[in-house]
Length: 271
Image (tube, rainbow, N blue to C red; front, side, top):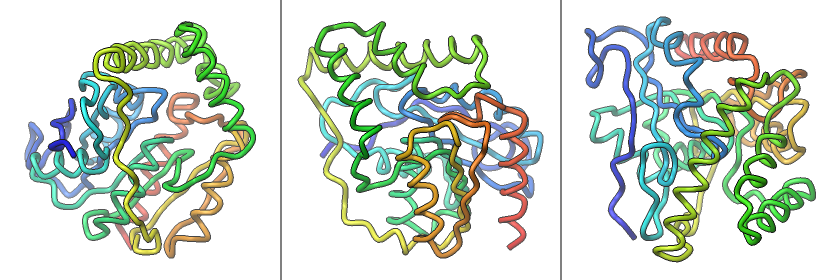
């Protein structure tokens, strides 16, 4: 097992790691999708700070500004190490897709450190891919084996963005995904295939924080199923399906998603 990495990250707002004075807002940790990197939160970054929240967003290993892993690791361990370094004891987690899977692992292992979770089309530890996701994975793997990264990027852009995403958003996702593929492919050529450590045994019922599990009506069935299932599994969770959304609602309708997040965070802080 490698030592947890210092993840490339940004901070905003007041508090122990910000530029301004402490405030009464919630401390937020923003975790990105595996299609993107921390730049996916650009539309929410200033509004969340403006709403009084202190925030940190980070890149997992092999994404954005964080180098690829050179040995097996766990992203949840990296996130915990980053929060420890920044002096953050407790925080709300705002997470998208794969970031939602990391958030759920984090919250199950260290429930006392999580005040709330807003999960946008989340993955889930232990989830077995259904037919749609398995077919996507097979198509992507075939393109990797053929060395066609450009086609693999376009496959992801087409699969994960809903009908409301404009060309500027598609280009943003295209750039983030291409960068991740290039970094990870170069690392694999040098170090060989490196994955995460096996998932630890998790009891998701240990998560006690309020949870909003969001799904998109235009997303793959796997992620719609996961969001609905979390509402049944977790004691303080609720499910909301957005009829207009694909897999990345915060990019598809930024203002609407930001309002959804700020409303949930305000409500959960009052509980």
